[in-house]
Image 1 (cartoon, rainbow, N blue to C red):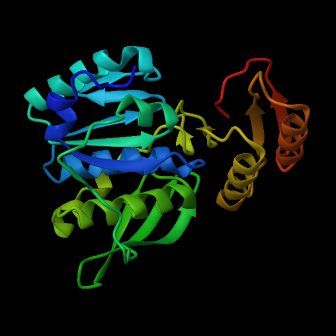
Image 2 (cartoon, helix red, strand yellow; image 1 turned 90 degrees about the horizontal axis):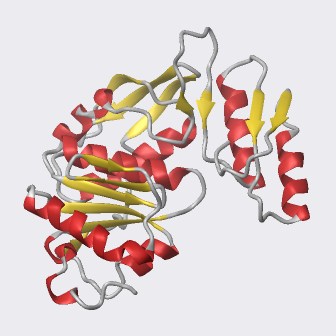
Length: 261
């Protein structure tokens, strides 16, 4: 059941809520960046996504379920007691139901007139060189371990949300060099190899085509793709995924049904 019995004293009522709709490959990275930037700006934030949660400094790497609603309420209460003041969610139907009927202290809204805070100067499979613009428009150069334009799009969306929430732009922008790559969006795997290995959440044909087009712009090297498909996919979905995968130079299809690509 959704959280109705304790709605009048639910810990979410003492938190500012930032809702990011689950859309394609970028939304999870946007939520991750918002969490990191708010923390860098001095806020005490928690993160809840369809892949799990990060609350009170503890990682919970499993999908939130409606049957565990009171356990997640308890974790949010622990977050509040430890000084937490905000919650970021990558919202899908299950998380929406998990928090149904509970109003947060306030919402961290999307600005009506977002602006560009960063601009790519060079994209490489090892990282990115950016121009970072101050509040008055003055640019400075920054090097980040983020790979690809999708990560930079997610970062710019996060910067707009965090600065619109009232965080100091100077302090927020100063945290950029310390950002880690987000999980599942061209997430690098470092094992000393002289080439890039990345994990990406692309699991449908459209996302896979976007990923491969992006990877092609980062390097002139061959692209080897290892991918699987959901067990409940239709023949049409499998055919579309195969057609999108053809943009790689070599493809390995796995027999598992995991969502990761």
